[in-house]
Image 1: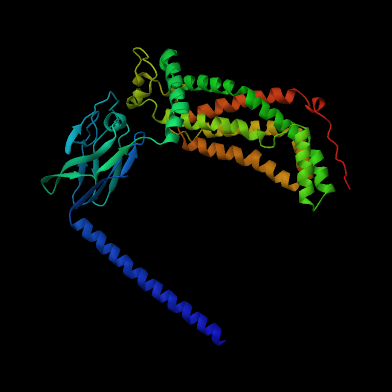
Image 2: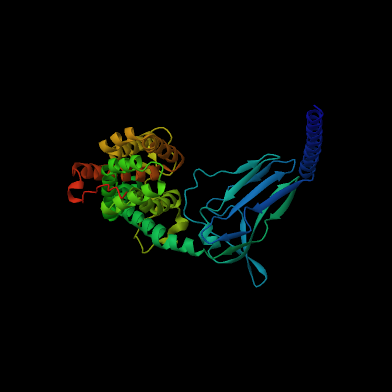
Length: 410
């Protein structure tokens, strides 16, 4: 009883001290915030002290004054004045690309509000040269014009991984997409994405076809694997050895079904960034060649006149993509996979996870990404469905494979 009483006393004392310290810290923090606002400071900083050449420089403004701060609309010019240090002097840099300014407007920051502004349309033209930079913002505070400067920041060369991914994936896909868009009547982005997807999937046809056949053979030998598990139950080493032997004899790669997704993944990431910022004139430096009189602003981002491919669609596209993914998963599982699932609870759970959860995840991702990425995924999935139908129609592959027997070595 004494120990229990002592424990609760110590616990109560700890809670009292914790609440008191927390109250004092909150009070100090509130006083610090009040002091910051009342001091009339406007914080103007970059989100990083160092950027690579392909990273978007972004500034953040915190209005800690008692006044409304107005950020004027400078489009098509850069939002704020940019300077690069050259020979110990700050040299101004300017850019005025041909962009659509119809939706741009001035920004009003109320006291206590903050706002971030990325240099999306001006990044390469202003920050393509490595070095030390700063950004200035001139505004009126309490009737007096003041100039605020960000911290000095460094622009460096891209890392090796970034250079490889840009050179082998992003730039080829970007140029392929721009070429198709420029060649198509009406310069429709949606049809260009569909054509590009069909080209990519055709390039990956042989490895993805082999992976599908490997998955089918794995389903066919699954009953044998189940017999091994029952026969050597409790002897995991023996089960592993016999399983590996059957995989080897049947020429099955248990991870082969993941290959199509792994092969598509770099293209998917590259296409995401292409769709997200590919029509930005600031990216024109990525062109392999001159596309004549074609202008990036001529690209039609509306698909079928109703779907903006640069924005996320949460009403129709996710359900369509999720449905296609579900249909493909059902085709991939096949009849033999269903029978095997009845024999093993673990496999039944895994099958259910793959069949139902995967499409839901894909649908959720589609709802958060630009619709152009969804068009790519839907086209790619449809291509995979046609592939799977041909593989399934081909009948059992076991006729051409050696018959594997389980031999009891005991």
